[in-house]
Length: 454
Image (cartoon, rainbow, N blue to C red; front, side, top):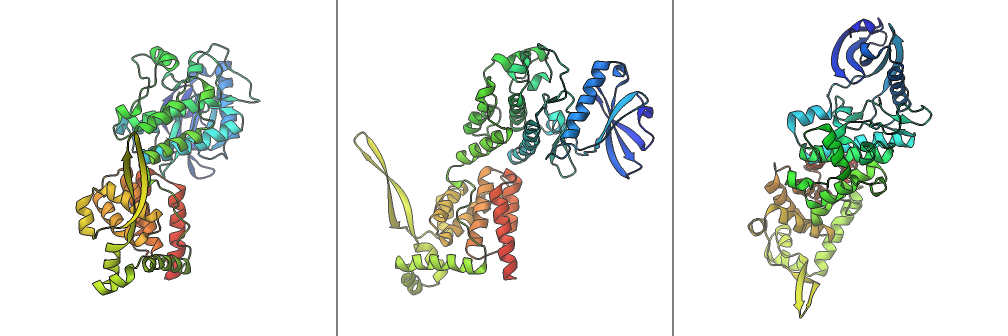
């Protein structure tokens, strides 16, 4: 194929991809002064009416979804020199397939962000009666902000657009075929959900769950092979992720998630569960104004007075340093009786735990857990030194623990009426685990509260 099949308004065309039904060119739209991508039907298919109909089908399905979230926008559909073409937005970031080839498994937070964006597009398509049928990393493209958009509805099944395939025909890519597709059965939204679960497995491990030497063997493996644990391929993944992926990759459609968004939520919940008590979440609605922060401070002060700590702190020296040493703490104690183990909660005055002592007595993850428990009890002053040490100890690890510790410290500082470093801590947490509504909410509260104080 050559670029003569493009309308004259599209200047300086450059071929950027080839395969499937046609080729894709990057070109300048002279009329609107913007860079676009143009998919043109290949010469060998130009006279094949069934292929031309399928190409038109892609254009209609994609155009129907042009305003949907995380979906490639279609600008124009037409025919020139007896070759159909589709003009769409140009995405300069390549595809997730490119990233996987270049870098292998992706960071967990980034993977979840991408999966969430793809899920938004697929769920919107399903709500419009459209099944993609070929969800795979090569069809998940990245824009200039590194956000995913779903492309290539060339094999989509859409209500009202008729059918181009007969029963028993396999449509899709072997590595991502749902078992029912591999058997030649009709694809449904559950098939797309399965395919996105395969993409999730690949992003998190760097490998497809059923990789085989041939496409036929891989397609059959989707039908009958047991699901391998992702945590065996990537030791950074907890076993809880295996359970979340297992449901997404269930052989029977009715056993899968009800939406692709549910798959992503399940993966996030699995990681939260594995992190134990340091789950990122809204502990309490704080920091909405200076008055509210003073209220929190007064509550902490009242707790100290009730415990009889303030007088001792004043006698011993600096109130802030000594209060941190003697704040009453709630601890859990295990009591074992014959054939019985009971968890008993007792309140005791802990031994002095100055920052130096705490740093020697626990690793950073344990310090984060201890700080989190104090946060839950409303003891932000006691949590602060522990969380500061935890963040310092975990810095640069890019672990889930670092993400949670950074969030917890940001929350604690804000609860104590401090704005120093809150934005940077939230940025660090988000870089590791991806966008979370809790982080966005706290960032909004921090901006509002700290701006008032300036």
